[in-house]
Amino acid sequence: DGDAPLDEKRAGLQRWRRDIDALYSTTAPAPTKPTLRALWLAINRYRLDKQDFFEIIAGMEMDTDGSMLVPDCERLQLYCDRVAGAVGLLSIKIFGDSGESARAFALSLGTALQLTNILRDLKDDAAMGRLYLPREQFEQRGVAIGTPDDMLSHPKLPEICGPVAERAREKFSEAEAMLARADTRALKPAIVMMMNYRRILDRLIARRWQNLDDDAGLSKPEKLWITLRYGVM
Image (cartoon, rainbow, N blue to C red):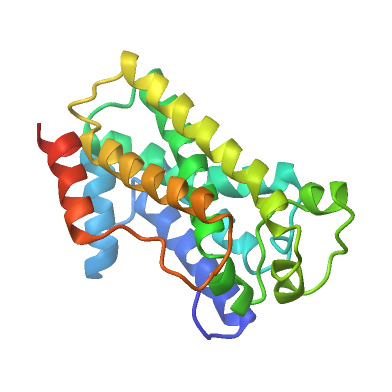
């Protein structure tokens, strides 16, 4: 994000793709730039997959090509897998559990987190000309596709957001179910995030997407309690 022209953003993402590719070269010297060197060290220490980095970049590119303005469900899922699921797959390797159950946990949690972000940030995204709610929900309710502000002011917005929230809840449940076969001690940072975001989602559902400017975030005491309950105990 930011105020740079789209061409500059795309060029910047292409530079990142080249830089990431170079970090996996067996012949190139170790990078000297602090950011790239830190990434290089992490890649070698945790055996991080290059494709996961490329997926994140591809997800960011989706925000520059106009395809994420009321995308269809399939494209929205692809976006979630790229910008959140791929981050999760990298993270679990750093946390210390990259087994199949942990991978399934990361992908389900990534979708749940990203859908919650979308539902929470409707007004902020609209200000940037974006609306990530799935096109099918508008079409099924006979709501015309217009500007993000127009669609957010439609009286059927709660009906449109409801199924998206339900899918986020389902993905949280899927992620939690995977923990029975994963190393929960290693995944504590992700579990803390899951519990934080579940509360945010519950708060959004209770508000029924009224007063979109209101902050749905958790208070510091709430965050502290969740961290102690799920990250320490």
